[in-house]
Every structure is written in structure tokens, then in C-alpha cells.
Length: 203
Image: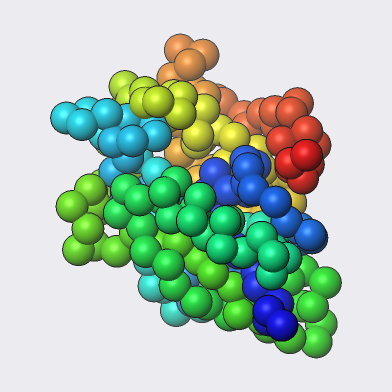
């Protein structure tokens, strides 16, 4: 008998899981913060011109919201094989305590598989000022689409969950301001129209 297995997504897995699951629910992990510090040369950039995608960094007291997916035992091997390939650009599997939104009052946690890129992988880019990150995102495009789309869809997905992430929302604000040719101070966040469809389980 397979134990219950959850996968926690905090980047593109929030809006595009693309694998079979039995249940999806918003949740968070404690002590980790989401940052656009990982280079992407296979999805949102190319070799020599990497995009920037999210990974996790340790931060005491931080709460990183994302989406949890419960995977059936019969599907687990196939799902992990697919995710290992999808996240091959510097990400490793880790087990972390996940709290679902419905379990916040009881503080109950369950173990979830999380893909994280650590500083020792060859595509790691590390910290940079947000305007510098925004400029790199604006210039980056890869096989999975534009880097701008990645940032904005992540910001939209988090907004749909009422999840606050200043790093993501500020970067999205800078990108929208550039797109409008306006000052970043005058821009206001938008919410995309496709979240309900994007968060639906795959058929």
C-alpha cells in the first residue's frame, strides 16, 4: 500500500501542474522564501541567455504559499519521472513539511515533495536588485515561452489565492510598468483572466 504523497508547487506548478492528481489545495511551507535567483536555460531562457525562475532560500519566519497536489500511489512513479525531467535544470527533490490552508487552525502538517534549486547548481544566478532581474526577464524567452509570462502568471496565481509575496508582486509591477512605458510608481497590478482554467486539474 502506498503512503499518501503530496507535491508542493511554488512556481509554474501552481498554474500548470500537467500531471495527474487526486486533490489540489493551497498551502504553505515555513522557513523558506521564494526568489527569482535560479537561471533557466531549458524553459524560460536559452544557453548563453538564461531567464530567471524561482527557487527557495532559507528565511526564518517566512511563509511560502503555493499549491499542494495529492498524487495517487498508482500514478506516483510516472509523476515523479515527469517532474524530474521538467525540473532537471538545477532542481533537486526535497521532503518538506506542508501545511494546507484547511489545516491552519490545527497546525497539522504533512510531508510533501518539493523541487528546489540550491546555490551549488551550475545554473544558479543568485541575488540581484529587482530592476536588474526585471531587465533580464524582459529580455528572456525559451522553449516554454517568455520569462515575462512566467512572472506574471505566478503573480496572478498568488493573487488568486490571496497569498502575499512582495518579491514576486514587486517584480511583476516593474514588468507591467515597462510594458506600459510608465513609471513603476504609477503602475497597478493586474489579474489575468485565465486562472480558473489554468488551475483546473488536467484531464
